[in-house]
Image (cartoon, rainbow, N blue to C red; front, side, top):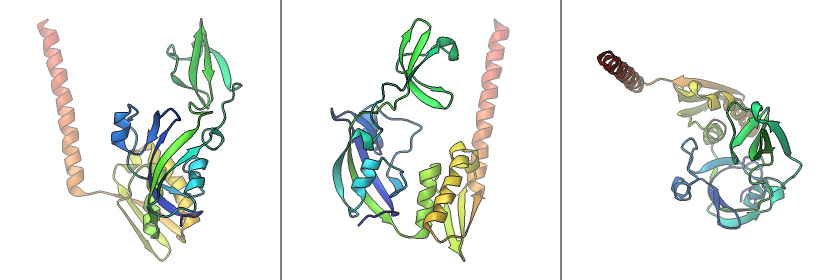
Length: 249
């Protein structure tokens, strides 16, 4: 039975009452319903029950279920993205934006993220409600696995908070050594998310120390270097071709 603090793996598809798919862990479903995001990570997700990694209404329904459970839950607005607040709108001069915005465009004003609702002359009305505020969300989900081993919990937390799969995790005498790929530190999400991952690792395991190390593999690094050189040479050839064409003209 799933309870508070458990680390689990699930899949889901979320839709509105009219059947519109708004989110899914299934890449094919996302493509079929025109919500595919090439920057998103598809596949089963990990979560710690009680940590708010998913919407409150879904999290509440998961508790008390068993691994293998498949079902549907209707999540009301107050346990999803909140009730719609008509007061969460503001008006800005079009000069506030680098480029003229369009209706429906998502924009960031200071630390607030909103949607352009209307443009009246040189005034832009921005709605700061979540796009799904006030809507009931229906989840079809499956509980795939309950993670038991501390090493696997650490791997799951790195996926949750950084989007990166740890290459290997070893725990000895209270110290966890987490190996990541050589390009992990070039990833902004990893640099920010690793601190949240470390915090939750300390909270749900008995680990006393965590060491994150980069892993370099000779063949992989040489192959990557070769690809970079080819790209540079290709760029130089293109520039040379363009230069020759310019001279002929």
